[in-house]
Length: 463
Image 1 (cartoon, rainbow, N blue to C red):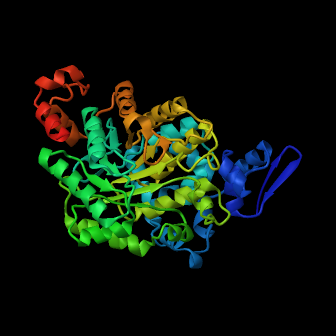
Image 2 (cartoon, rainbow, N blue to C red):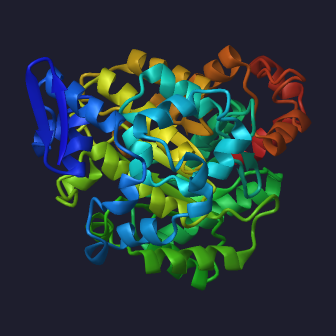
């Protein structure tokens, strides 16, 4: 039982899970689940109690029972006590102060990551303002590689997302060409397929592989089918680069996705067996999202941000190239408006990086949310300042297959220019070779393309 007093009022929180939930910034998903604080005073009381809680408490009290949940077992069994030792004496409030101090350098935070449990990361984030989340995350660097190297300081990668409602190869290639001309694609070229038919999926893998190989593009492809389809495709000889799966923070949620840790291990080994990376061997791509656990009734009474952060433990176990929080995709039932989406995006990015993940964020919203593109511009800029590894590049910011609003190729250009960010180094060299960018990384005027070496590539792609 946890207690805090504000004035003449004493507040009692019956469990660690309740304390974390009541300390969370207000959001619609927690209210829907019935776990949110009922007043600003109760929320502040929970934060006061949480600030005084020793970090060690999260090692002694599992939020979901060890014997009933394989994600809990993963968190407990893989915790690195030696890495945790430098902060073992701290409270959650003390941890927040330490993270913002000069002592928490990039090297120190990298060594600390295996000792931080997801629950510790979620807890400290609840005591942080937006600027704290940005300042702390900015110091953390998680670098991964396959054919391009992601996460280096001063760099921003973009996933080129050329989805099509009928998986039409011509439409996908047109969107891909558009993205490449805008300098997008260094994180990956990733297609969310409309069909689960193995033959059609194989055609998408072959098409992307041909494109990348023929033109020497230093990037990686991904067809975001269910992981079982990807294992089947690898066994059948398909040219699979990244292995994708959506994951969550409880065994029950992952079961609803049709996956388990054992299946993910099988997929990871299958991806590694192909040895297709030239710059590194990070072969996994995971996506997550606040609200997924509640929507599957797999949240175990926990708040949605704590559930989200537990999903990062699953990701961490497989050394992924990319982890993407699709922050506003599920809808206003979970993140009601732009203010809640902005806060959630900064939380997810900070918590993922703190435990050692190469975090990207799909800065997005659905059309029935109380949000607009101005809100997305704000979150995109804040994440750029926080050192996000990658964001999305969607034609016109409007995904015509998934039916939601994301960020466009132009948005990536604006962020790179405003914060002086560059492409992944291998991809930058390729763009320079084809004279798509100048020596300062600026995109060339489209009227100049006909006279550039890249003109032949454009003609080939159009055919």
